Image (tube, rainbow, N blue to C red; front, side, top):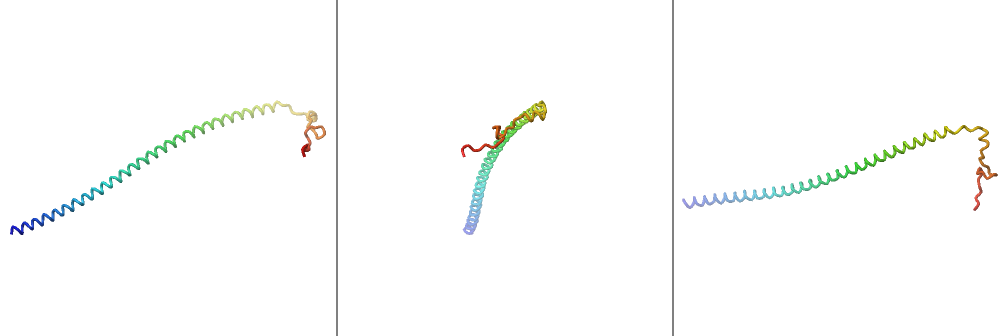
Length: 131
């Protein structure tokens, strides 16, 4: 009877040892899977961190380019405003100068030599001297 009990106990211990080995193997596999998941998560975090840094750099570059464009546009508006003011002043001066010119009398108009082809005044068409 002792021999049968020992065999039965031994068999139970072997069965428990096999179950323990299966459980240990399953835990190892879970640990490896979790370790692999952690490696992938770390790689993803590193990639996201790099993308964020690249994005921040891009935003800073765009902000700088925008500031330069705004400054350039303001300078251009300033120059155009100054040009407009200068042209307006020139227009007013021209209008003033025109207003100071006395109207031409018919006699005065007749005395102006507009030129003619016979007196060399430039009213005619010159022939091509090299033709």
